[in-house]
Image (cartoon, rainbow, N blue to C red):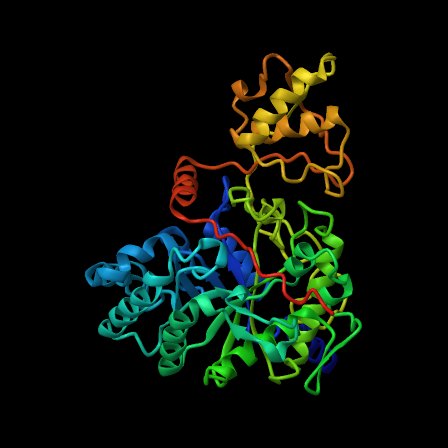
Length: 478
């Protein structure tokens, strides 16, 4: 009996996530999984915090009664109207926040106003509308009687600060946004709200040809020394660059939340399951230790990015944008992860259960086709309307031309819910019932959607702005 009790305690301890850990749940997918099933999966895996990019009613209803801590979001394109229309802000708060605060409702902690609104590639599009929107939403929260519990934050990209020398101690906020970010910083400090920042070591590696690969991970690479501190990875260096920037403008005591951090698994030579697992193993072990960074010791509050692959995201930053998920498009885990950060065992997370698929059939290039140049025209057409970001050198689908064409045909066919007309391709496509997958290159069978789920997916695709994850390429190293 005693032994059984000890085993129970050990098992319970092993399932505790690292403190402060959450996940980003984006829904830029052509075939999103039912939110109720996703919430069940999150709970089974012990995940207690989620960050959303909107406040989709179907998702919010699924989260009701779950006990999860939720950060809801307001897309950038809504800032213009919210910035000068307080009644609209009140309406938004009523429909997307207080509507769900009844007993057994949703536990909302933050409203994320905008998403990386000061990103340099936006050329100042949201600079003037962000702070007025933040003030209007917070005022509406206050007047609704929930402002002390639910606070406005702004998820910033790490490019809002820079370091001319690539050393953390030279960290400073960009001059072109200084006035506007100071307004936000003073607001956050007055409300005792955190500074939310998205940090992507992968992008430092991707954007800088001379960047040492080991510095993107947590393998104790060659250290950088800076004013008595020692940095062996870019995550710590980036975080402490922010701390120096905050210190220089007089708000060194602000709490910091990592709104997004992760590693993609396809779409580039640095993107695969092996490197993603390596990154997450190191990150989660670090978070579990609660060692913090050289300048700020203690636990870090972090949201992993992201939950699922999203085939409707913009690929302007790179093809990897559609492959950030720790789960595949159909809710299956990609690689073993220990969310407790103890690196014990090699167990997969629990996937989404009860996923319904279309029929087990695929569309491929007819083997009788000899004129591949004609077929390649059809490939280009298919890839213009479907997701072909796994195709290419050093990607999961590094295929010969015939197989590349088949892959593209099938992506288009599955995206069109296996409509028979979508496997024509001027007579060059044919249906097969034997799985044509090749090695790590998976020819998918798409998730089946009900009519209501299809409308929901279309609504998400039209209403949610896909953020571009450009970041500065600082820390190219000395």
